[in-house]
Image 1 (cartoon, chains in turn green, brown, purple, yellow):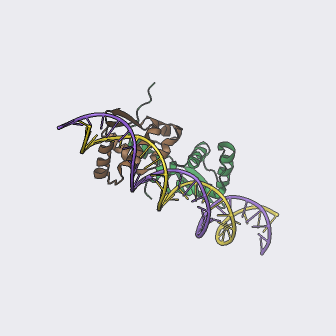
Image 2 (cartoon, chains in turn purple, cyan, green, brown):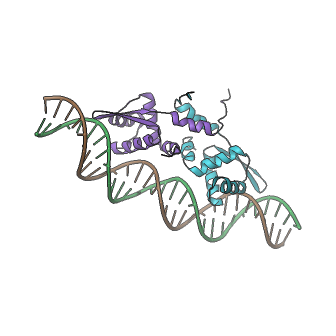
Image 3 (cartoon, helix red, strand yellow):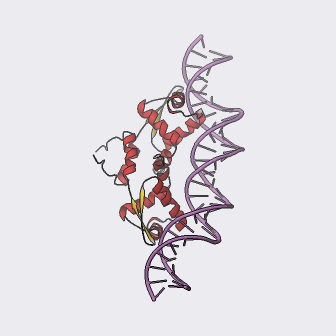
Amino acid sequence: MPPDDIFAALADPTRRAILDELAERDGQTLFELCARLTTRHSIGSSRQAISQHLDLLSAAGLVKAERSGRYKFHHADFGPLRAIVDRWPIPEERT
Amino acid sequence: MPPDDIFAALADPTRRAILDELAERDGQTLFELCARLTTRHSIGSSRQAISQHLDLLSAAGLVKAERSGRYKFHHADFGPLRAIVDRWPIPEERT
DNA sequence: TTGACATGCAAGTCACAGCTTGCATATTGT
DNA sequence: ACAATATGCAAGCTGTGACTTGCATGTCAA
């Protein structure tokens, strides 16, 4: 509920990897995510662990889930990250 | 050392309040920070707690410390936050 | 309907983050 | 020199987060 949970959500490396995965390929299912996290991100977490991470990301508003039959497709929403950019003055990249 | 610690550093609400404080008034000393965090942010942490938070923020590169005599002035550096902006595609604010 | 597949729920374990406590070090003013 | 000020170091306590384990629910294909 509190939007401050964005920071807690981003605190875990596995959750950041999930966001990376969904950024590259949107609408993945739980099993898809588990497989790709294992092969491409060297993450050995169980299915339940990933599921709990997805719950947390959903609560933070960073992931939207869409159910279709026995599948559940997950979409990343990076809009809440604007709260970080708006909160502190991030300096320009110096060229 | 690992730059991923930015996320761990931002995970704690007290540390975010410290960054807020330093963003508003740069170059504060440890005691100054403690006082202002108590009065303006309703944070009741001890001096040692704040000191440890500052160490962590320093390790993450978000705070630079500058010693002068018996005082130590702290400056916020939000440059590392660019890693967040660059990592994921944050959508535009829709007007 | 039955079995295989995809996901959900809940309790228990364990390591670590944040805090405190107590003492140590270092600098300034008188 | 001495006391007050500002900070540093290290060990111990405790709640919580990440993970596992085991079972339950729900959906599709044959």
